[in-house]
Length: 372
Figure 1 (cartoon, rainbow, N blue to C red):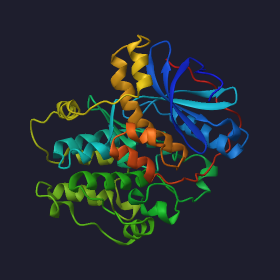
Figure 2: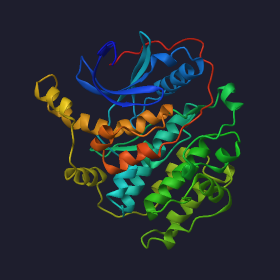
Figure 3: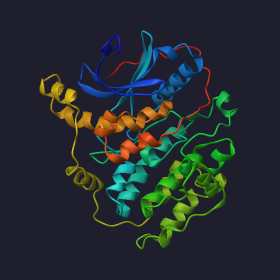
């Protein structure tokens, strides 16, 4: 139990998860009734420099990124013994869930998802930030058709010399680049390889380098070439296959030079005509239930914030399972959390693996950034 129910101008509505190092809450920005995802570093770890630095690194990395296709950090700072950060809500699903209920996505939908994802990465790379963990669970789609990238907890800032000296193996095995596995220096082209893995999966419904365990995945990434997408799905053209193969080239120098180059090539790929992605997404979400815990339902019905927030909070329950992982909490969600999540998202919690990140030195705690 926390000794307070408010951090700065954020009211904490309900605890949703407790990991080894952090607490996860649903929060509400009091001035605008804006739902937020709030992550707190447990006070007993507040004196451990490495954990504090890692938490601050995540916040500072997110604070640099202001883009419509990146989940926004609304606020971060220190409240008493608690370091905290608050992220914007996304009313929707992650791409893993989205595709599971839409196993044969139209090419036009795939192109639009990749377009927005590449736009986010091109922007982040322009800031000198490599995501390092691009995968379906970290790609969110809201009910209006906006794609947003989340979980910059593994992000590496290229200009940080402390990070460039480290060669720690980080990321999700089936989506790692070869240079990530071998411990080479990383740049944006590593993320483009991961995009290639995501794109392959969207086109074929199969992982490019999937395997029964970590070692098998890594072996395939280093040594094997996946079956051409056009051989697995009739509508996939040779142009699409060439695009994927360039993203998945084992050598970074043979891939697209950057996200902008990949975007330019993507725009020329053939897709279905008369397709509206926003309409497609809205239709997808029409039949999906929104489940609220009783405590949240009572709060909304009491008039403390409007009915429009109900759908937002429900989606936030889904997003929390993904975003809290950016700090590396690896234990399974408690039963009450899993029951409120869809099967895919609950499984994502159970499948999370502990992450040991390189830590940059932070001279002083971050200043509080107000909610706007």
